[in-house]
Length: 366
Image (tube, rainbow, N blue to C red):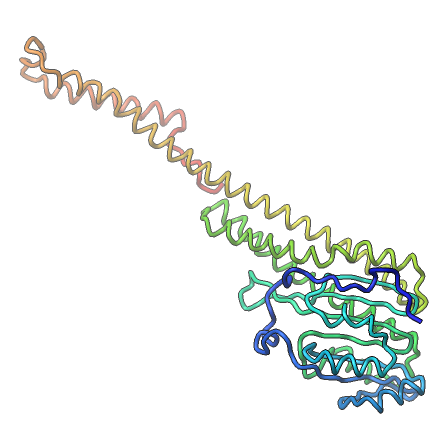
């Protein structure tokens, strides 16, 4: 009998998808048709079942054979509900799995483990993320995966490895598959963070050499992506610890050890994300400092020109006054003398400013 605590199985829908739709979901209008495949763990070894019908799967369940049921595409809610209810899955467990987009979660009940994650990746534009929801439900003798994105060969690497095994897989090994799938989703985040870190390094160098407003736009986009990734792993920090304290009976010693490592992995991911978010702040500060330095250079240039031409303008203003009694007006070489005096003043000022380092360009990279 399933007796969850109040609110434990309530779907926590997000106001909007964490990122853009993948190509497969975009083409199918956001909801792909559901397809079913299964892996049955017989004594002789795993067997892939591509044409999943209710009666054969129910017969396998009645024989006590562990099953891994893979549901790809969440467009056919009724088909999913009818099949799972026939296999003994409680209907209250389905809403958090089939409704999208859900908040990331790890929930442990008496005889069920429920996990919701978002598989993140980059679109064709590397500054934009795409996401698809992945739901995992572990029951005694049954593991069900709800993959929002349709795929001809779901979980191809893991499936191929399992089919190459020639020994029986015990029922408790379904929890190892659960752990592997969660770990695979989290491991995919590290290459993404490395790409973001590489792009942020390039942006930081560009901000110091040639600051342009588009650099800030790219930085803010990467910061938004980091915030999206962080929002998907933040709930797991606490929920995995809670599940480990509950001593879930469906999880064997190896799976429990894997989940402890997963808790450390989530902490490492979160720390890495925080470092990258701090780097985004440093890029913004470097941009502001570089722009301010260039503005100081412009003001310095204008100050140099003003200081050179100010005394020359003063001399020109004096001799531009309309007075009859000006002795210099009757000098034979007065015009040339004024030019020579003005030239000497300008040269003296240029030399004095040069010695003080005013003509040095402070914006050039060192």
